[in-house]
Image (tube, rainbow, N blue to C red; front, side, top):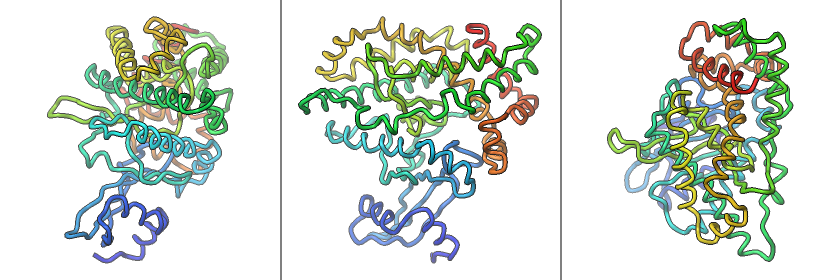
Length: 419
């Protein structure tokens, strides 16, 4: 198969010759030749909101022609406001930092994990991420329109706990190998910042939407105060300020974006056996409970949390503790961090879990094709980001029962508990 001028140009726009050769050097035999490739969107509609997501299949000639399946995330090529937003807020720099850390962790661990909680990356930079296509390895995404069931929650929480423990072990080893205590943020604080979950126009717009959504679509609309939007703005800002480093407890890197599309599952028949966490553009440094509570509010129903939350939290802590090395367990004692303190932190982090879900549900619960048309339009991108996104969201909610009801359940619980 010959390259067409159009497809060659597309590949050249995506990867430099040096980057392409680096991939071949890692994944193919010496002297292998690229004979053709297929490049297409990873999904129909939008797969994520901070980049273009593509599937790249390389047809490589060794003893015979075989396929190398890759997943590529790049700076958007057709939405300049979105590209500028990603660059200005260092989302890709943060993800590149994480994959650099993962390589260091892998070197320290020294063994291949048969049930990894993280993906590998062949190339990671400010502009592009290239990693294995996990779907070609048998991983699947869970339907975004559904809540996770208990089995999927437990498997996902296992991987979240292992992620947090791996970073805590990494810091312990860095401290042991150095002449002084290693402080992660000494080197990375300029990247590990928070661009939107602060007193920002984006957060004000999220509160505006929550207020309008409730007043127009909730059966309790007449009970809400006239100043609901202002009270929500104040609450959202206060809640997001609680996500920070606390000196008197354990802090780790948290993912902070654990919605369903960022967790891929592997199965043995119908039994879910492992989960890989992907997309590390929103990471922060904070107590791990913030990740756990955000995950629960992003992926489970209110009824599920009422029935199983305590069991899930105890399972998380058990896996976290078992995944620590002995030196890290000793460090835990110095923080006086145990199951009871973790559960206390989960209650403190509940507000953030609810606010994060409230802020991003309008995006992530929308049908991917509809979401792409709505939120990936260069002409309206910044308007919906920082001014008002309630028009298209409420319009779609009137048409789609699942989209409306999931948001109403969360917004009503948030106002009931805190406003």
